[in-house]
Length: 290
Length: 311
View 1 (tube, each protein chain N blue to C red):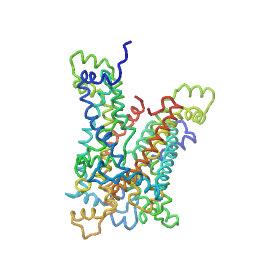
View 2: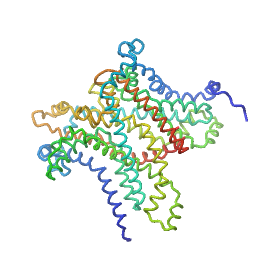
View 3: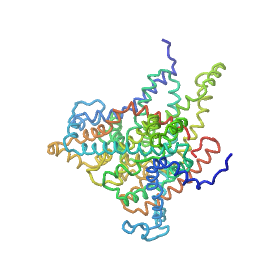
View 4: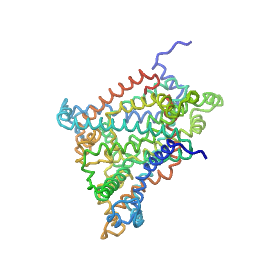
C-alpha cells in the first residue's frame, strides 16, 4: 500500500473527528437515558454510565402514559397528513406539467406568489381560528403542512422530464387525463414522490408549530410538543410516575427526559438509510431550475 | 405563426378542453387560496385595536399606534439587531464550514469513508430543535452538564450557562453550523462534481499541485453557487429561525438581551401577551423590510449571474 501524505492524513483525521462530533451529542443523550438515576445525580451526565438501567424506558411505556398518547397522535398525523399531501401535490404537479394546458404558467404563478409573499404568523393564526382549526386533530394536519408550493415545483420539474409522446400515444389510445395521471405519470415519478414523501413526512413528524399555536389540550399534544412541554413541566413526569406507582420514590426525571428524547427520534434512526438517499436526491432535483 | 391570443381570454376554453386537469389542480388551488390569499386581508389589523369578537370589519382603527408602541420601546432595536446579527453569524460560519467540508471531502479518495462520514454529518439535519435542546441541556446544564464537568476537571469554576446572555450568540452559532453544515456541504460537493475534469488534467500537466488546483480551479468555479446561496440567505436575514430560538431558549427571559428575535417577539405578543394587533404591526415591519431585501438581493444576483436569480 502506498503511504499516505501528511496532508491526506490530517484531512482524514479532521473528517473523522467532525463526523464523530455530529453523532456524539446524540450518543450522550442515549447514554444518559440508560443510566441509573442515582448515578446521574451523583456523577452528572456522562458518556460512560457507571450503572445501567432501563427503568426510564419502562416508565415511559407504562400503559396510558402521555408518551404513548403523543406517539399515537404523531404517527396518525404523519401518516394521514403525508398521504393527503402527496396526493394533492402530485395531482397539481401533473396539471402544471401538462403541455395541453395553455395556462399552466399562469397557474404556476398563482402558487409562486404565495411562496414569495406570506402574510406572516398573525393572519395565519387568525385564519385558522376563524376556520375552527383549534384544539382538534385537524389543526395538526391541515394548516401549513398539507401542501407546499416548493414540493409542487419539485414534482412539476420532474414530470417535465417525461417525454410528451407518452401522453400523446396514451390519448390516442383513448386514455383520459385521470388515467394518464394515475396510471402513467405517477408510477414514473416514484423517485420524486419518495422525495416529497420524505419532506412532508419529516415536516409532520418534527412539527410542533401547529401544536404551540393551535392546541391547548394535552390529549392532542404531538410527540415533539410534549417534549418541549416536558422540559419545563415536572408535573407531566409526576403523572407518569403515578401511573407506574412510584410516586413516593425519587422521580427518575433526568433519565426519563432523555429517554423520551431518544424515543422521539426512533423512527428517524430506523428510516435513516432511506431518508438520506432520497434527501440527497431531492436536493439534486431541486437544484434544477424549472 | 398563428396570432397570439390575449392572455385571459383563453382560460375558459382551456378549462373546457382540459377539464380533468383543472380538476386535479383544484385541491391545491383551494388550499393556496384559503391559507395564502385569504390571509392577506388580516394584515390590516396592524392598524386596528383588534378584538376577536368584533373581527376585522368592526374593530377600532388606531392608525400607527401599534407601530409607535413597538418603536418607542427599547425592544425594537434589540430584536431587530439580534435577528440580523444572529443570521449573519449563521450565514458566515455556516458557509465557511460547508465550504471547508466539501473541499476536504472532495480530496478524500476512500469511497466508503466518505460515504459514512457524509451519513454522520447529515444526521443532525433530521433532528428537531426540541431534541437538540435536550442535547444542549446535557452539555450546558449547571450541575450535571459535560461542559461544566470538564471545566471543573481543568480546575475552573462552573458557569451557569443558562443565565450567561453573552455566551449565547456563540453557542447558537455552533449549534446552527452543527445542524446544517453537512447538508450545505453536500450541495457544494454536487457543484464540485460538476466541474469539468479536463481543467484538472490540464493543470496537472502544467505542474500544479492539489492545493493550487483547489484554490485556482475549484474555489473560483464554486463561487457562483456560493454567492447565490449566500444572497438567498441574506435576502431572508430579517426572518429569524423561530423553531431554533424558541426550542433552545424558550421563555428564559435572562437570555433575551442577546437571543430574542423578531419572530419570538411576535409569537409572545400574539400567544402569551395576547395582543394580535401589536404582533401584526411588528410582523408587518418585518415583512416590508424582508420583502425589500428579498427583491434587492435577487436583483443584484440576477445582474451578476444570469441564471442565479430565484425568479
